[in-house]
Image 1 (cartoon, rainbow, N blue to C red):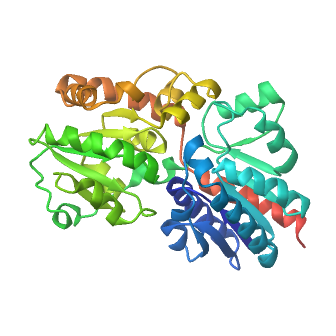
Image 2: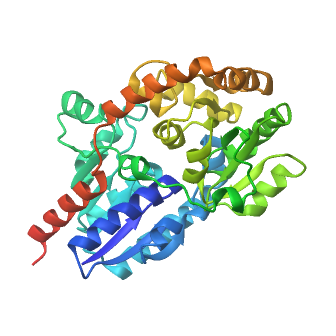
Length: 373
């Protein structure tokens, strides 16, 4: 069968790739066309559009790039019609994917949504769109299924978090320390400044200023594959930070602490049992709009799942060099080891077992087999 998969960010590219690998085990003749990045490319999917051209965040940034976004919509629709897939598989990226779902349903494509939009945080009215245009919605956080069922009488499939498929069994590359010339005797700090240019441009200089205050530690910067190395090099010029290219999990395997921009990265860091401080800063307009629309107590997935302020969150004005440095110093104190160990163990219990990608692939394939002769 022919599958058309749309991701828009590095995390979606990663989870989409695991899903495709399991689909191929079920469907030996699967043909994959995708909007994605290196992870999907590694599955031998044909990448029609690379995600490096898609990542816009914040209200102001989206407005400034509206013509490019509209052009991508038109391009996507034409390509789907030309490819004529047996199914559309949408992975996260709701601003784009929900519009494609609405259009795709009018053309009678079966539509599966993997990693549903965070409607419990904001834009809850999107549930109506999901119910109307999505054939099956797969959710990955433990509280989401109850939210949909009790508040909206909407039956969704809870499959568990796809990170549980990869992180618990991840093996550090034996050449990692040699490749980046990292002494194994020095404590290392992971810097995860985000996956979009706008957030990296704002947050990474703060991280590097903190690094300058702490020459006793080695600071490793997680580069995402969708953003050119030169972009990081311009920001890091003259700093002591080491850019780690497309090896975030290796980085987290050796890190003793981390500064993490809010997002999936906070959960990845936690699953590697690395103590962390969550840092977030955006434009004044984007933050003001978010405060009006977003209904969350916390910005990190770790705190949301644990339902308490377990991780320190430094947001906007609190996200400054002095505050970040103070909390990082506390983080590296041995007295906090037990605190993080206990919290992360509880987090893993709440997230459950592995198998999200496999379960999702099985349900998609089973549904398609009943619809396609």
